[in-house]
Image 1: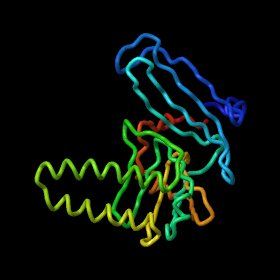
Image 2 (image 1 turned 90 degrees about the vertical axis):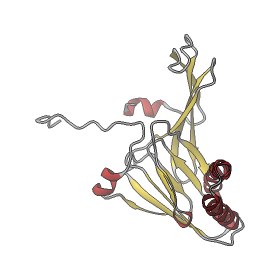
Image 3 (image 1 turned 180 degrees about the vertical axis):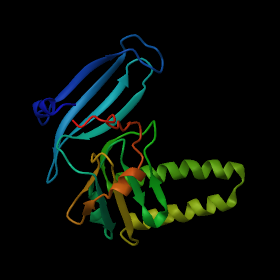
Length: 212
């Protein structure tokens, strides 16, 4: 998206645009994108885009910050219940880490972006963990089930404000963030940027001799 196009996006605007044929089911003209621009207090404008196939139900979402922001590492120490309402803006290229429970959510080819809060992120992790626990239980892996139960218990205590949780989010493209009073941030080093996954995005290096 070019800078001139970004400036045309008005807060509260919702656009529905046709994208053509669905790459999943092959439906003719069934793919569309819904774009919603809104403003996050004390942060700025973001655009949420959701691609949907009207035939097979295929869905993929992403988030774009409509202001130039450098790649940063955002950190929040969750210590009480109100910290769970800290806003989370995660694009397809954002990596989320929940330190105390050893969870890292890294972007991949099918990664989705979202705007939520810390409680919403924890709930996503809890639901995934419950499914993994059931799978391990059916396999008879008692050690894995026990570990899952320990993490699930820790999550419940975090939600009750009884246990701390360090939440981090980093994005090499600068399109992800934590937004709240207790959030600390710093610029990512070039080494950190190079080590982070871009998810479905591809970094294009300038051709040799191109100084533009």
